Image (cartoon, rainbow, N blue to C red):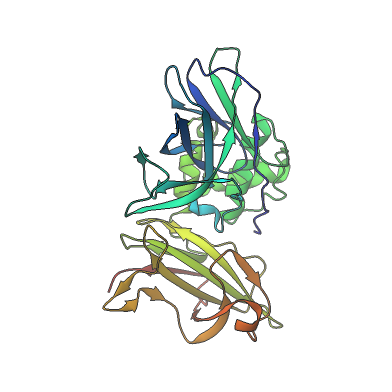
Length: 328
């Protein structure tokens, strides 16, 4: 599966901040949101709020007094390289896990700056304030939920494409096969925990395909490369949180798969043990770069703004392989 570059829109109109503030997700991704509150020249941030497709989450309860409300959103690591562009103008501090930061313009140890976008939420019929996360597909709630299910089915290896939020025999067949393989009843599809069930399933080591599992206390960033007999395509980065697994998207039937991964700290700096980077790779030199990338050209990496990186070949002869990243 190739992740599209989702265009995130924040739908809003002017409204007084007099009630609970909630974020609603009309994207086909399970997201984690953080908010920033500007009030009398002081800026605080808090997060992360996990929000499923077609769901809403209250992020501030009660009357909110603020000069500005800001928002940042990220997709779960299970989706691979983040499909959500970050282009806000306010650089504010966040932490990797749940956080509340009172002075969010000066980061401390374990905090990083990310771009926030200003929003002015709409006041709904219930009196609450709401801001919507949306893709350029402009899904309604029902379409966003179905597209979210389709996307996770594809990542899990089932043919539910295209990811369009439109129901049909292919989607229903893929969903039925997924439920059967996990021993789940069809009743669970309508439950509030269904996306958690799907994400947990996708993050479980699989008997087929490649699975990365992060057994370290650090965040791991990984890249994959596939050889089709004509060219080698390298792609990254995939975020694998501690104690979780991830299936990188692999299309077709490549002749060879290669893998590279490295542990990073809260500031996205490579973790070192005894002055050596904590990474997992091999001798095959392929091109990577620090930001999201995909390239089928593996020569003159440096001249093209890439860096040669040692990937390791993955033995897929048994049909499936789980690579576990651990601290030596």
